[in-house]
Length: 250
Image (cartoon, rainbow, N blue to C red):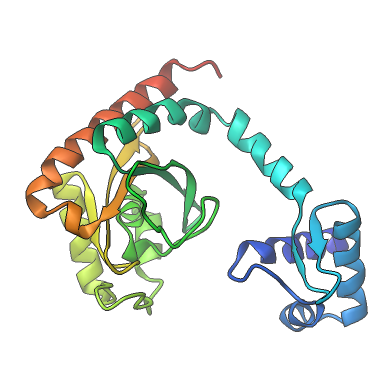
């Protein structure tokens, strides 16, 4: 079981930054002999979970991992019910629409649909992102249970991703309180220069947080006078998704 746990932790390392990993890099990270790491990675490669560049000998995520992950998107009740809702938000807002969830304490871009306006989110779906620098992350922190919220706020120091990123813990907490009062969160170039975002919570039957529904757009295309209009579109989509989840077969 210890060997299996080590192998899975090594596979999970490919979720983090950097497309490719080396045997030496992972050996240092897990304090293991290179020979043992090489055997584990070779087993994943042979099974298709990893691919190895024949020239550099580095490893990256393989096709079998994609197929496995795609099964989640196809059969998970949240993602199945969300796609039509996201399409509706794209049609009404004109911008990229995203659905994000909390994985333990880490916000995760789950799925999204691109709009007609190109936007570089600086992150692929299936990737984690900092909560304090994103509209979706602020929503997830605001509407999570109190214990989770406090743990996220205690994760300082917070990275200054751009010159507009809020990093002071007290200022971040004040921002979350504002999100709660107005019912939506915004981000103005706080993660990607020139890119703004808005998000609202998706709340379940018992008032529990399910996800954050958001849009991303060039800052110059949406000013503060447009926030309430776009927030209304998102809130309508959030209610629709919550209703679809309640009525969906289990």
